[in-house]
Image (cartoon, rainbow, N blue to C red; front, side):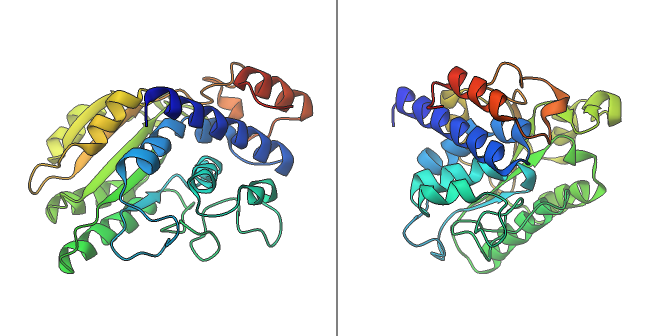
Length: 271
């Protein structure tokens, strides 16, 4: 796809996120809006998938460890053809296939149930190790949050991925620098992430998480033998909606009807 097409899809995904969370009356808009380009890059340009066969054994896997960002993933999956886009309006309803956090037993295209922060990367490490043991060629991608990186289990999983030489694993950090309680540096600083991941033994890439050209090139690049990839994707929380951008308060708050309309006007969507 060309850049304009990818940008248009991203705008539609952002519109979906606002509509979904607004209709549900709850959800996490900030961290959903920040990962849109990452997910569009993966599902439209990078990952080897078959939407018509979500459980295809040789598919590439995606683990959204920061599971509260699932409205973005749901929109991309629907737009990619995993399920009908009408389902998006049922977010967080009782009995819906689209729950508040990803559920692999309910939603076509979800490879791992996530939401308990810190655990998804361990799942991704297990998937990548399983592929090695089965001599399968599929790759595993895992999106983590920077607030989530304060969890001890994340660091155990990072060590395991290096120890087992999982060069079929790519970890993507949604580095929007904000979490529910405030800026990362105020809550618990992560220090120099690039230096720390390099010291661990990762091939580290520090990129603009909203730049399709750089994202796709980095995600497509071959991992060096025996080395997992760690991508620091610098993003803006609430990206695309002016009054949500870089605002801690929009981590887990749904927009009201007036705010939904204002956001959709900015995104060029129908009100």
